[in-house]
Length: 158
Ligand SMILES: [Cu+2]
Image 1 (tube, rainbow, N blue to C red):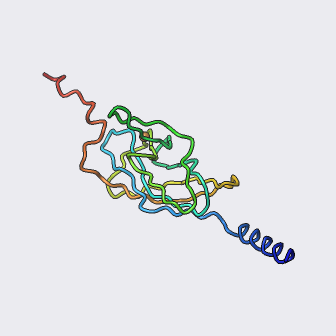
Image 2 (spheres, rainbow, N blue to C red):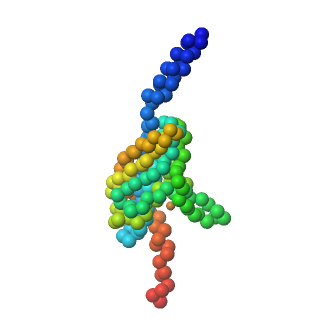
Image 3 (tube, rainbow, N blue to C red):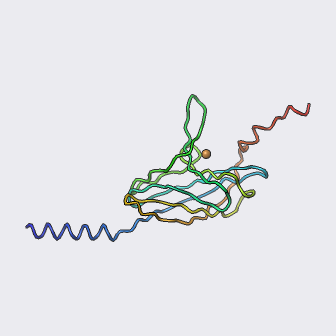
């Protein structure tokens, strides 16, 4: 009996050692920008096979890329940079404007509707092993006015 248990334990350990971390990215997209706009966001669904976290995102279209979390306080939406986004095993985590999102800052140029924006996601598993995932995110124009337009002073010319 003891021998069998030990063998089972060994085979279980062997199995878990052979399973490599695998993270699936679905529906990645980037908000298209208007000329002169400095920042945008990247959004996607992430499903990790083991408990992991998204620790870093890189993109050639932006000089700075941060992971942000949007929060609602007294009806005011604000956001701050966070060090990582937890990716529990088998659970799809939405990276979306209302929650965690990837902020593309200091854009090197306009992100036009239909552009394929390369993103590199760094995912770290519970053992600290880092996996680098390349994604092409499609740029999509939204019908809503970009945030920066709200800051124009329309009354100044009068
Ligand atoms: Cu943000």
